[in-house]
Image (cartoon, rainbow, N blue to C red; front, side):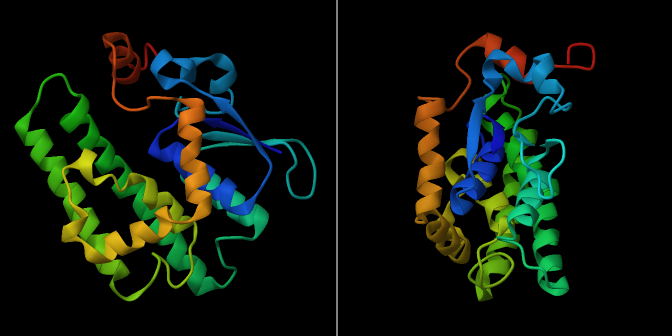
Length: 232
């Protein structure tokens, strides 16, 4: 059994995509980040960076004590190795997947996240910041579009954790982009969206967080964006 500490964000969706594809038994423990539940001591014991997602594998391969992990990329890699799915064992193919997994973790996710913040959530609209992150998101879309020009998925012909990592962060409307400008990316995005496991993963949003999206109160803004080392 996998205990999944989850909220309905792009990083949360990465893990539900994997779990729904593989059929691993899992139980969701919602962490409402708008209410500050990510700062509870029991959650911090699993995820010291106070971010979702996090997991506890209650039945690790080979037995022994439960294993907890935070950071979505580390979770995807752990689950892929646990199941032997969505990551190959061959050196070259594995290297392809890992470099694109880390590309998402270090590039697409953080840059798109800043795009979301300054474009959609910041109380003061700062043109320089908005332009900076919209353009960088556009550049990263272009990188992925070029990569997909001659292959079905990010690391080759097969769907892998590299695709699961990037897919939830392709949100054109929220990021000031249009997929019409990126035909290979658009084809890839449509193919993943059509997978039954993707539908099941995103159906969880209405179960866990109906009406998801946006920041509705000033209190939510303070919780999500007002933390420092003294408050965390």
